[in-house]
Each structure stands twice: as C-alpha cells, then as structure tokens.
Length: 385
Ligand SMILES: C[S@@+](CC[C@H](N)C(=O)[O-])C[C@H]1O[C@@H](n2cnc3c(N)ncnc32)[C@H](O)[C@@H]1O
Image (cartoon, rainbow, N blue to C red; front, side, top):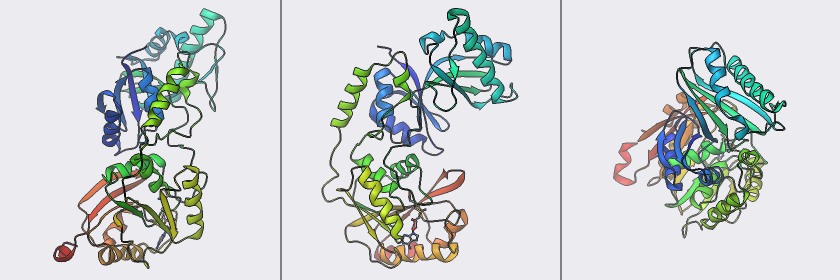
C-alpha cells in the first residue's frame, strides 16, 4: 500500500485548530496547521478514513507533486508534463482543473488552468493518441493546483462534492448554517457531551445534529454514496469497506442523562428541523419544540446553549431590541450556564450587554462573524454581567 501520502484537509477560516485536533485523534501523522487548511500524512486507507469521518473538513486533497521556481508559462507547462498522468487518469475519463492560492507571476488563474490542461492533453496525445476530455460539472478526476508565490503544489481532490453535504438536510429554513461551520462551532465551544444542550433558535436543526454526530462519533459522511477517490485508478474497494466497518463500530450512545433540545418560534422551522433530524436517524436523541426563547423558562436539565440568532442580513428583525432581549433573558433565566452565540452582525453584539469571555473570528458565508462565549455566573457573581 502507498504510505505517507502528503494530504491536505481544507476548511473554513477559524476552524483550522479544531480540524487539526480531529485529524490527530483520527490518527493522522505530521499534522501541520495552515490557512483554511491542515496538512498531514497518512496512507491510502487513512485518506478514505479522513473522507468518511471528518466533521470539520470541506475536502481532502492528495498532493501528488510539488514544484519550486515556477515563474513562467513555459516552466508551468513543463512541470505539469513531467507528471506521469496515466498513473492518475485514463484517456476515457474526464477531468477538471481548478487553481487556488496566490502568485504574482501569473496574470490569472484561467491562464494557469489552460496551460496545465494543454500539458496533460499533449502528454496523452503523444503516448496514447487519445486524450481525456474536460468536464466542468461532473469530472471523474478533479485536479487542484495551489500556488504559493513560485511554489506550485499539484493535488487530486479525493472528496468530490464538498464534505459539508452530509445528505440529511433536505429541509432548510432561510438562513441555515453550513454543516461544517456548525460542527466547528460545537467543537470550539468544548461542549463535548458534558451536559444537556439547548439550541434555542434552532432553525433547521444543524447545530444539534452536528453536536450529536460529533459526540456519538457518527462518521460525517455516513449517508454519502460517492467520493472522488472511487474514480481513481488506485481505488481499493475492499479497503474502503474495511475502513467504513471499523469506523461504524466506534459509534456510541450519548452520555447518560444528556439531552439535546431545540426551540424555534416558527412552526415551519420546527417542522423542517424535525424532518432533518429524522433523515439523520437522530430522532431518538434530539427533541424539538415550538417555543419562543424570550417567553419560556429554562428547561431544568440544560446547562449549555449554542445558537446563531438571526442578524438581520437575511431575516428582518429590530436588531437593537432583539439582541437586548437575548442579553436580558440570558441574565434572568440562564444564570449558571455557558452560552455560545455565533453572531454575524458585529454591531448587534454590544446590545446584548454582557461581557464575553471569548470572541472567536469566523465567517458565515462571506459575512464576518464572531463566536462569543458567555459564562453566566450565579448569585454573587451577577455583577460580572
Ligand atoms: C439564523 S436562524 C438559525 C439557523 C440554524 N442554526 C440552522 O442551521 O438552520 C435563526 C432562527 O431563530 C428563530 N427565532 C427568531 N426569534 C426567535 C425566538 N424569539 N425564539 C425562538 N426562535 C426564534 C428563527 O425562526 C430562525 O429559524
């Protein structure tokens, strides 16, 4: 088996460290944190394992070659042609090239992709008199060229469709969180099944579903039917079956007494969340109720809150009074608990009127957001609010 492949898992800004921890726990070697990415080493089986299990990665890439001192089109063409492409695709397969990273030596990424495509196609024509075609929509092989100035890394995307597409979310409300971001928030919160968790504005239920999957060690891609590595010439289906079976054996129950509860005041959101939870086969573990967070008492069992309130970008609310009310309700009803909020409106944060003990910069789509942590003290420490 091929050992020590150079692998990279990509993710969102701010989730690199928690992804590195997840990779480390899964058994990755030489884990190194990058920018929206974590580099690591592992064999082909580990590449399958990473794709099947990781909750915090968007894609897993295999670096097949790297080149230094690529300043000109001619150097780029020669470098790409030096790779033995018949090891990775055959003439009857389709491929696509994407370019990421930054380099001041080339005017645009389209030009880089075109040059690289010419090099691959010319190599096939010379050797086999046949060439693989391009497919932008459903390529068999997805090549990603990453530039860091004059250094070029050539990757194969082993995932295909982004790994955030878990398959459970058939129903969305108007502002659902990306699944990887939701898993990231839960990981950053350090909840780790310590106690019962409430998402009091749960929308389509993503945070609760991801929390359950993380804590119960349910592989993130459990419902996925295809990965790009299954199109590769070196694909070993027996090995993948083994990896899946051993990953599924690690699934465990939630700790005793730990409940996952969601509220939403909109009946349509409640219905959608319930459907998504059913799709994820988690209806025995997550309970959704139609409730207005501002009007109900705290459930006795709950000592952790994680949520992303609306922030007026896509859902229209009076930001000032809405966020003030969040702060008031937390102070009044939730003393003694920890609360984590993802807020995409930086102005809105100050209306909460509580001092966060942590602020973590994240992005929700293009929107700069903060994940804030409030430790809501009981009794005498109330003055800390
Ligand atoms: C930004 S969305 C949450 C998205 C969710 N995290 C997801 O991934 O689908 C905010 C949700 O808060 C709900 N909401 C607004 N005010 C509320 C209130 N007072 N009580 C409970 N839910 C509320 C909205 O109906 C909406 O579904």
